[in-house]
Amino acid sequence: MSNLTTTYAGLNLASPIIAASSGLSETLENVIELSKSGVGAIVLKSIFEEEILMEMEQVKQDMVGRPYIFPETMDYMEEEPHEDLIRKYLGLIEESKKAVSIPIIASINCVSNQKWTYLAAEIEKAGADAIELNIFNLPSHSEMPAAEIEQMYTELIEKVVKMVKIPVTIKISHYFTALGQMIKTFAKTGVKGIVLFNRYYSPDIDIEKEEISSSFVLSEHSDVAMPLRWIGLMSGSVKTSFAATTGVHDGESVVKLLLAGASAVQVASVIYKNGLHVVKEMNQYVLEWMKKKNYASINDFKGKLNYKEANNPASWERVQFMKEFRHFVK
Ligand SMILES: Cc1cc2nc3c(=O)[nH]c(=O)nc-3n(C[C@H](O)[C@H](O)[C@H](O)COP(=O)(O)O)c2cc1C
Image (tube, rainbow, N blue to C red; front, side, top):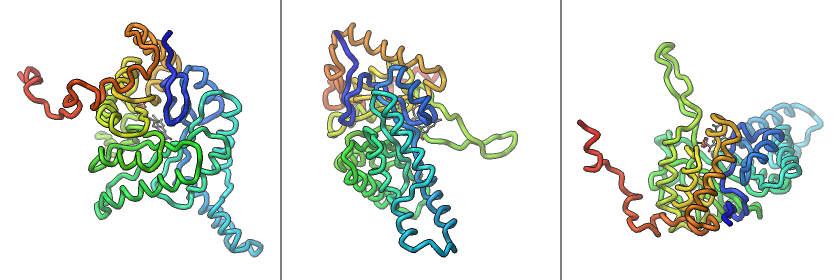
């Protein structure tokens, strides 16, 4: 009998398909619906550092000039602000944990290691099974060297890892000068999982209005090539578990990513496009493929084709279109 159980970031999941952080996991109702769809875990919509800091600032400003506010109170507000946004987020974790039996992963979208990091401990207290740090700083400031940006990332991760006992994972972009080396460095910080790669809001240009607009929000199936390559390249040599995100739209992609060494995948766009029933179809596809191949568990084939295990690992490194593709040019 084949089964879909997998271990990702130390969490035991009944399916390798995780609901990625998005508007689909922003309310308790959605969390309950997602859990019924057959996903193995849910990453809640991120709480954003900039929102937390803005709210802290607002509360501080509201207090300015009030004679009965002691300076220590202001310090307390900085260290432990209990504003609405945070209260609401912690409430969503608590209620989700009561309502569903699958793991709930909280998500913090952060760009710096400022004072918000205490929030990780609050999230743990609220009952989250893990914390996913969605760290991203668009490296557009040409005066900041790569090493400085990379150090900022590792310091932040280490700070959060030290603060909690639950697993911490990170979701990153591919905007690193030496991506392979960075993934190895991140794995040494104590994170239990690395999610490759986040998808970001991208600007576009409306040529009629001659204005900056927003581009497509949802991914395309072909986008899966990027996480597939990097999980294939890294999973055999880096001691952490990997989850793939961006462009995972069907069961076939899930099988490919597991063969490349992913322990799980995270999906959002395909649910936005086609509805929750796709999760069941994807689970079914993987299960049937496993039965056809006589695999009893995901561990039997996970990473079978990664860089370390494959017969022709150089295929993972090939980047140029050489003679194989000449027939496309006529
Ligand atoms: C509408 C929307 C909202 C999202 N919000 C978040 C978020 O708050 N935090 C986060 O880490 N990722 C967020 N993401 C990224 C997804 O979690 C996911 O990693 C990304 O969309 C790639 O997966 P996909 O190709 O299945 O969509 C969002 C994606 C979409 C489409």
